[in-house]
Image 1 (cartoon, rainbow, N blue to C red):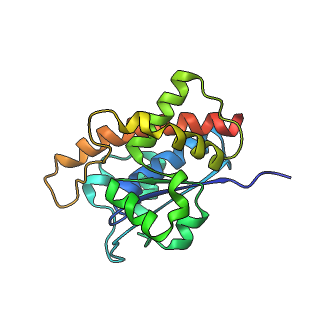
Image 2 (cartoon, rainbow, N blue to C red):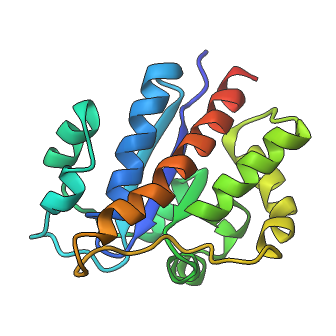
Amino acid sequence: MTAAPGKVLFLCTGNICRSAFGQHQLARTLDQQVPGAYEVTSAGTHMNPRLRPPQQILDLADGTVLEALQAHAPTQLQPRLAQQADLILAATEEHLETVLQETPAALNRTFTILEFAALAELMAEQGTVVEGDLRSVARTAARMRSRVRSRPGSLDLADPYGGPDSGYPVMAEQLNPAVESIAKLLVRVSQG
């Protein structure tokens, strides 16, 4: 019997920029390296069903990510999504708090995107064993969280929406390496 895919949920406000871009970037990488091992989705805390990813986000994407973003429709965060997710990656501390208000039991599997990326890098540097399912790995990361949270700097991913066009590449400069670090850890987990 094959194990159920690990469920990763990206979260931001409108689910048309940060979480959508992160979802489709991570999904493409994981589909290429460990097909079928993960189900990557995204949602927004205050999404508008009439909005779609803006052109500035589409301009940052290529290939299958671009195709996925062009077809992307925002999803509203529901408690069920958070309950089912094995790993929740929030754009900001505010989004993380929204999840925990609705689903307090998700504490040990909810992180900001930049926080979890830093934890993934720390786990790789230390050679942390990543056995078990995705929830087990998230719990391991949660036990290490104070080491990342004590570092200077924000764990929030910049929000480009409604700002100048120059904000979109800045967001991508933060998000792309974070997704890469997360993908490396998740590949290790699935192959572990």
